[in-house]
Length: 552
Image (cartoon, rainbow, N blue to C red; front, side, top):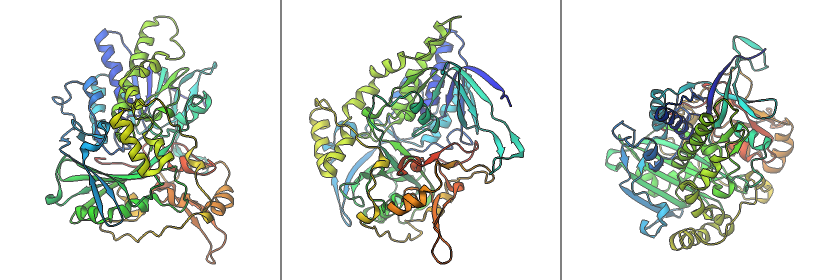
């Protein structure tokens, strides 16, 4: 069946900070010049902000450029950073490192503790005021190409398809959205972006990307323990010194705080359970005391790009561009990426606007070569260059050596030392056989400060239409048992922060099978990243499925 289609000048996949900033910039330029450029944004979440998940301490640099009067227009930046702490944890104790000893990139003067989801909701309203068409609840499931191989646009997924592929009474075919350029702003490990990188060999000139899994809970704290604008980071326990990880605690307004933990997905021990490490961290005396008397409200998880400058792929290809975390502009030293995501969206928008409006009746240039050129001249590139060795130094020196190195590199030399460390392995290549690695004993959750995964997923608002094809696809159904279970004790049971993957056996404990509880999926993409043979391929489920994050 030939699909219906709609045509725009620019189609944007994803209503996150990058996609919305790009859309706003395009329409601002259109209003300033009187040259009409049509823009639409597709968002797979049920609403703008439903799938947005970040720390978040927000640096407003890009927002200042995009909407200088954001304060007057009511942007939800209500908790300026007022106090900062950095602590090194041992199992029972803690030591505070004076913030003044940390490199300047790690300071948060002038930043805000925010809900990034709420900021995106606000940006979405600004975009619509400017004439951007936003379609929430529609997942871009497929890239559409011209005959010459140039990206033509995307197609939304069919709705109303049953588990076995049959069309239900509610069936509605997908629609194609065509653009002179298509921006992919899907966030970290976007499924379409991954395919585009392979098709156009966009990673030819970059290091492998390395990732972390970030988990976060929203808490209502005891009023006596809450101070808006408080920012706390920790390193050390419960991670061993050879495993990347650390926490964040951010106090926002209304008596609420974010409590989160990040584990680098280049870890070696297949027995490691990132969600269990997060829950164990909260039981540390210095953390548990803060949470006692409080109440957990929401939970979520999302992978994040940690490769930095060396892992940024080629950004432009025939008919489209990667922006924001689809490419990976997180500054790990800052623990921030939203400002860079927004700025790259704005840079791509400026390039596309010029290409569309300058071409007249001629065909637009196939590749937006001005976008990567502008990126390399921007403050995004400048700050990523300065911090380029921060994350790979950990792989070379471990926790203590990398902290010393970061102090010398960033604090003393401002990131200008004349060498660059590189990421040499993909995260899925790093696991060692289970028999060679120590097992880890994780305490049972107490239901007050530490919790299990299923109760956590429940408060994430996650929901999928059950009668639909499983979006967690296996290239070879035999691999989970014959390879993953046999060699690595089925690490997918543990690396998933939502309990999606489960090894089930018969009553005698025999005949192991992999059970995929796709209904639980919070769209974090960890399985797509960490599966040892890359046998798991995450594809988009029906639009509007997945988490519905409030204030996250």
